[in-house]
Amino acid sequence: MLGCGRVRATVLIAAAVAAVAGCDDEFGPDIDPFPIPASRAGGPLTLGLRAGDVGPLPALVDTLSPVTLLDPSVPGEPVPAPRRLRATVEVVSAGPEPVARARFDAVPILEHHPCDPSASPCAVGTEPLVAGACPVDPGSDGVRFRAILGGDLLSQTALRVDLRGAGAAVIQLFPDIAGADAHHCRAGDAVIAAALAGGSTIEIEGGEVPLPPTRIPLRACADFDPANASRPSGTDLLLLLATGIGPTVVSESAYRRYAAQVDAACAAEPGLCAGPDARLDPPVPYELLPAACLRLPGVASVARVATLRRIAIVGRTAGEARGPCEERRAVWWMQQGGCAGGADCPCGGGDRRCRAAAAVQFEPGGGIPVAVVPDGHPLLQALRAELRPRQAEVDGLLGLDALRAVRLDIDYPGQRLVVRCAGGDAACTPFTQVFDPNDDTPAGRCPNVD
Image 1 (cartoon, rainbow, N blue to C red):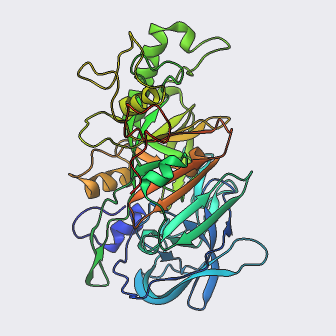
Image 2 (cartoon, rainbow, N blue to C red):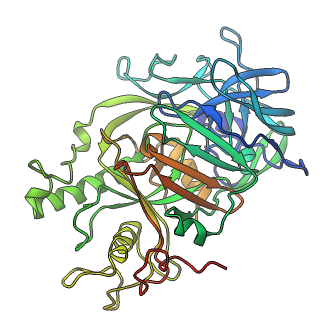
C-alpha cells in the first residue's frame, strides 16, 4: 500500500498498490448508461477489463486501489518489471457474451504483477493455511484476477453498485449522481459525505508520478444495541471502502476494543447477549479466533476470522464532535421525534432534539465476515501513513460482504455516497439526515429543496 512521499516500485509490489495518476483525457470517458452485469461470487466485485489489444481479463472493481492495473505475468515465466503505459481501457460486462460498456481513451495505466512473483494469477479471499502459513498458489476458495479497475479511472465517473438481486451484481457508470442531498433525503435515501482522501507521489521507471486522493474513508459503528438507544453502545471504527474484497478487515487492536465493549455490555445486561431475544453475540476472545490465509489485492498474510452481527456507516453533522456510534444513536432518536425522558440523549447541552447525520445499518443474515489482522500489517501501516494527519488512524477496510441488499451510489464528483436499501429487507436499514429536528414530518426533517 502506498504511503506519503516517494515510494519505489518494490514497495508497491509488497504492499499491493501502485498508482499512475494524472489522466489527461479532456473529453472524459465514453459511458454506456445501461446496467452492466458484474459478479460478486466469492465476495469482491468483478467484471472484464480490456486494455488495448489485451483481454478482456477478469478484473476487480476496487475502490481501495488508486490505480488501474494490468497483470502481464505468464505462468512459468519470469515476472516483468512494473512499467507505465498508455492504452485505451474498456469495461466489459461479465457473462457468456462480454460486451464493452465503457471506454477510457488513451489513459495511463500500470503493468504490474501485484502478488507473490511465483503465484499467477493473483487472487483475493480467505482460504485454509498450509503448515501454518499462506500457500504460494491461491486455492479454489480465492477469486482470481488479472486486472484491477481502480480509483484513478473510477473517480472520473460516478459508480452505482446494485447488490439487491439475489447472488447477482449490477453496476452503472454515470458522469455524476443527479439530485441534491435534499431530493435524495426526501426519497428515503441515506446521503453520507465521503471526502476523498490520500494522494501522494510514487517513483517508478526513474520518474515521479502524482497520485490523486481516491480513498473513501467511512465512519462506522460496530455491534451496537439496535433496540435500546437510551445509552451509548457500539464500537467506533474508521474504515476505507474496498469493493475489491469480500470480508471486512479490522486490526487486532480494533477487534480487542470491540470485544471489550461487548463484554462490558453483556455483563451489565445479561439478557442482551443470551437467550432467544439476545441482541448481541458474545465475542470470541482474539486468541481463540480461528486462523486463515487472507489474500488482499497484492499481499497475503495470516489473519484470524470472526463475525460481526451488524455494522452501520454514519455521516457527520456539521459543528458536532459526536463519534459514529453516538451519531447513529442521535439520528435514531431524532427519527422518533426526539430523545425520550430519562434517556442519555446524545444531543448534549440538555437538548432533547438536535440535527443528526444520515446512517445505514447493515445486518445481513449469517452476520458479516471479518478478517482480523495484526496492527503491523503492511497494508494498514501504509494506509495510515498515507492518510495522516488529516484522517484518524484507519481501523480497517469495509468489504462487499457487509453491503448486501443495497444500492450504493459512489458519487466521486460529488464526494458523497447515496445509499438505498431493498424495501422490507432487514439486512439494510437507512436513516435519513435530520436537518430540522423540530419538524415532525419525514420530508420536513430534510434540508430545504432549492
